[in-house]
Length: 393
Ligand SMILES: Cc1ncc(COP(=O)(O)O)c(C=O)c1O
Image 1 (cartoon, rainbow, N blue to C red):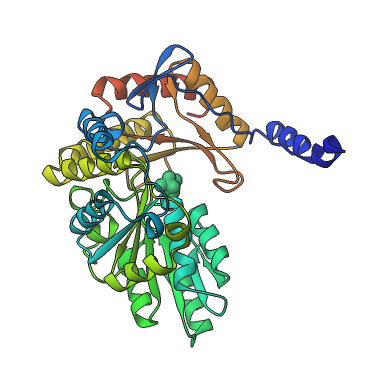
Image 2: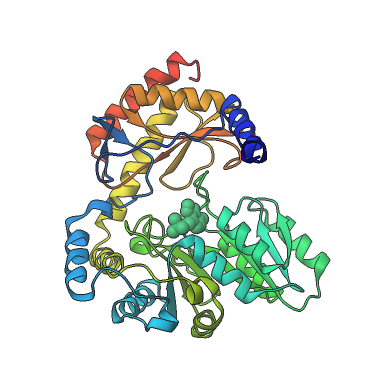
């Protein structure tokens, strides 16, 4: 019977609720921004990856509207079958120039860019050395490839080197890391990792989803931050965070991009993002190339907020970027904290297992260039009030 067949799901959902691990999704009644409307109420927003405040920027909206008039609303089919629109090619050229690489290929999301790239580069008889805290889309891409996955301790280059040398020699292997780790805001030691990759001829891939628009000159990403142009084989990017839109891409050597046109399965078997999305992405690149103003403002806001939280007495972990975890430990406490912030007018989600390890639950505060000084001052006061009330500080 249907009910019996699916009864385990209800039990699992109940158990998640009991452990404080059930994800309650808020419904928004406004565009993304520093303040958003939820349940008819204006709230301070610290949840989105809208780093540069571009998600509701009039220049991006105007570009999207103009593209609909010229190109319509849909891409028709996958690009290899229906043909590729000039607009998608323009975005890929613009991203290649922005990133300082030979070529790029765009995908529907950062997630599918990972699913496309990893299985295209390694297979059943190969190895992948993967940071233990890599993003879920990297983990899924690794699994799809059927290569043997060898996790190494987070950002631990000695552990990586030990594991690589134990398995050497091998025919083909990849080294994969997040650039900026999205739950802690720390950076991968790319300058050290690249040395191991070069010594052992590993195909070196970095997922720069949270680095683009944030680190490097004018937000050009983590490879630029470490001055490693030409030494990292593959950079994965997303258009859904700092660029403010949606989509993903791979940046790197022409030969890798040529291969992904032939073997990147989400490119071959799923339609591209819409012309409106692509035009908005190009407008975002225009803005980022014009000036570093938004990136500078993001860092100013991030530094100010982190100093504020620390001076109140919060533990903000090991962040090196505007991603600010407020470490609370137990998942139910993090959920209670988030609920109290919400009642006080601050939207900041609690993050628990399996997104972060058990016992490392937190509120993750995402700063944006869109936040004003008043937004920051107001929210710091609310964090202090809730922190005192719940005995965290
Ligand atoms: C490191 C990393 N890679 C990939 C993604 C997926 O990006 P997208 O939202 O474009 O699918 C994310 C998003 O959370 C991410 O943090």
